[in-house]
Length: 419
Ligand SMILES: Cc1cc2nc3c(=O)[nH]c(=O)nc-3n(C[C@H](O)[C@H](O)[C@H](O)COP(=O)(O)OP(=O)(O)OC[C@H]3O[C@@H](n4cnc5c(N)ncnc54)[C@H](O)[C@@H]3O)c2cc1C
Image 1 (cartoon, rainbow, N blue to C red):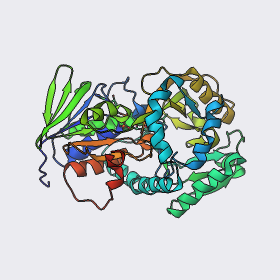
Image 2 (cartoon, helix red, strand yellow):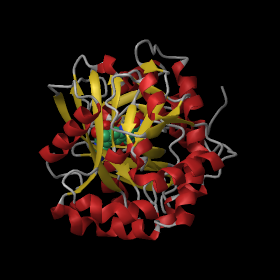
Image 3 (cartoon, rainbow, N blue to C red):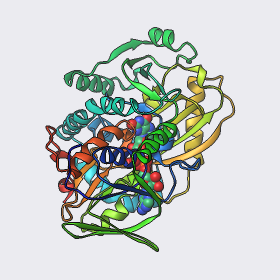
Image 4 (tube, protein in one colour):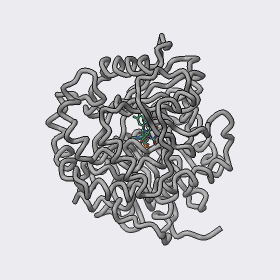
């Protein structure tokens, strides 16, 4: 095994980024300890990496920093039946994020985001396949593609998305309504057309996959400590300190992989990082996962359904409201209405869940060293695509920690862009 200089690493967060980073570091022979306030092997573990829609979406290069979406925001916000909602008490706190968002809502920034999302997304499935060779994925993954459907109402946006993907060489097969119904005969035909990404796959149990990766990490000698981390700092070139309420831990390097909660830690490092959250929800329809054979996303509604082990998972909406507001019953009702619109045979639901997408206003993650504390490394801000990007993030961040050379251009993911 190659010898790396780094003697020890602490990773804060055992979501999909944290466990994949831990695994890649331990594979290099670098001692790692992952910290989380929740135990990933416990059934009450429920961060974004638990409750997401389970799509591995290497095609999803276009994000929400787009003029067409910006123009639609007022209409969406004031509609009671829209995919976007706001907790009005959070508006003042959201202003810095929103000002950055406005700055990034133009064609040039949109294409910049697409280009650099594509750089990492195009490597994402291969990075997972490497991990899957070492874990038991029986009943955890289905390789049957992912379908998006839409009505003819927003065709200008659909055309833009199709063109950008075409320009980047992403495989996509456009479908008419009849072709969609041949693939998914139970769907109510309230849509006009769509697209299938035939090579896309989905998780039948995201938490199950995360647990398998975490167990492999432990088996290879990785350590886990259940602690809520309250502060951290770099002491000198060879030492960082992580503190919980009662304990103090020393590592040569520390990685912040705390998802939407990362800002409480980065704020201590004299950097202004406009990380915020896009809240999302899910419910399960138990025993109804057999109604569709693959994830189906209704683009006009900003919602989708994924057949999973827990049942049919109906997931979606974006709610801007921070980390502390209570869940919104209205958002759950919205998802229920959308699910029953596509599958009227659905009845009772269970397991209402709220989760926090970690989102930066230019819709690129931050992957790289802190500007003023080189031994503290950032790995957060994966917004709607953090599940897809877990394994490749593990490879990139472990390479940064180990000071390996890379052919990737990592400069667009630096926090420098906000400072
Ligand atoms: C509704 C919804 C649907 C989604 N669907 C998809 C999808 O289909 N495909 C996709 O690619 N992505 C999807 N995503 C996005 C994806 O789930 C997230 O981007 C990803 O899970 C983020 O992973 P993470 O490891 O960065 O953060 P998290 O999963 O949030 O994990 C962070 C961990 O850090 C811990 N932590 C935080 N602060 C501290 C602290 N101070 N001390 C100790 N521990 C701490 C938390 O307890 C948590 O376990 C979806 C998200 C949502 C909400």
